[in-house]
Length: 270
Length: 270
Image (tube, rainbow over all chains, first blue to last red; front, top):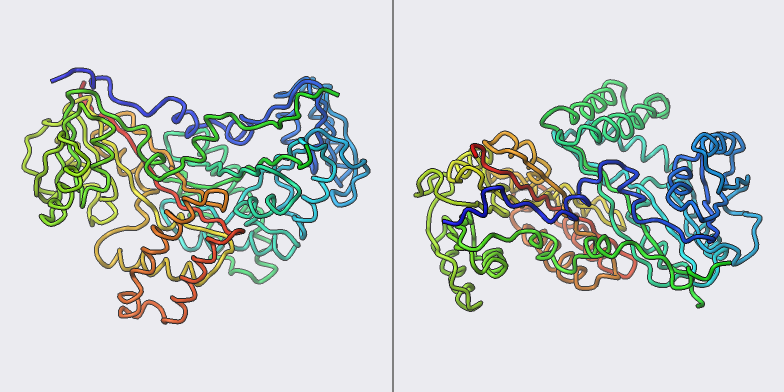
């Protein structure tokens, strides 16, 4: 009998690293970097959660990060200052009425923005119009309908559906992630490629149990308790049972799954 | 302005390849291979769908593939013969009563089997008992509750729930994929690692549209029409509408998502 198996037989390292991306930042951003000197529009930067990562990963690129909220921009600018980064300019504008010339950016980056828009296809058409031919647009969105977990619990799914319904009533779409390919394929783009970025959490990954299941996803659902109840979407005991069930998935035998989608396309015309 | 962006900026090639595994075989098996001379038990080989792939990818390993069904074994043996492979022996046995000595295999492989068992933890305990210390067990299972698609359709989900309910009534669990980590962590194994293997299908991947969405998943759901209706789980018009909605996801703007889970652990005791 050969002894070569003694140390076990492991999956290819690159697969392991891909599956086990330690943080959400790795999972979503590890393959995004922009060349020195290129100009990048970040549309809908919010408080700069992604801006710091983008600017740090592409220190020689020049970012223009815009948001509709002046307060958010102020916070994003503080974060960039604190990070010691100097390659980001900020602007205040509606994503559907951006004050830039056609074909004036080398690249566009959009993250967690389409989910809030009533007309995401229009937004993509406008953003694509700002790209130089051959430039790329990168889009990252979540999909709350991709959520499942062990132990399975109908009340937890009912609580999640409250978030989806409230977002729909606000004009958004919490299921936009799965729609990235048709949305991007309908824009003036070549070579659109969309891939899932699945967050898989079990108790062997404690940083994701705490950082994603508990403090990101479950906290987000907990945050809609009052509006969901006020809107008559759910009875308080059922909502609370659902949140308890989400916390239950953070125990030793629990598992939690959620999928983001990332798409890249290239402006036609080269 | 730098011109380096002209040819676009693409994700790292290994990520792209991982995301776009052209076939289900690549997605599920590309990181499984066994050393020359090692002995591998394939428990629950069925008609040999995985056996041919396993034996071909590890031509110097020796496989023992067992199933409870003599008819299935005969078909599996024919497939192995037709593939020109000579490194597989077959045996007929119940996975809960296998006629092998403790610690008599270097590795164990189980694929699409736990989903059919009422006591998957017991099966894993038995299989782990057959492993030599330091040997590995690899488990692959699907999870029908991981299914979602665009356009979203409640009737399609109702039809899928029929399959899940029928499998539960037969003593199985079509949601077992998400439970692999706790199931394997409870066995006599070290270093259990579970990762999702998500099948993401959009119309840029026509071979998966046809091979997976249409001919694998939707065909499986269509196959439970009669028993689901006979069991009173659903009205025929709703089931048929659900199946039409699943076919609708194979159109140009459709998207289909399903996730398998793959786990590997190492027998304690080295």
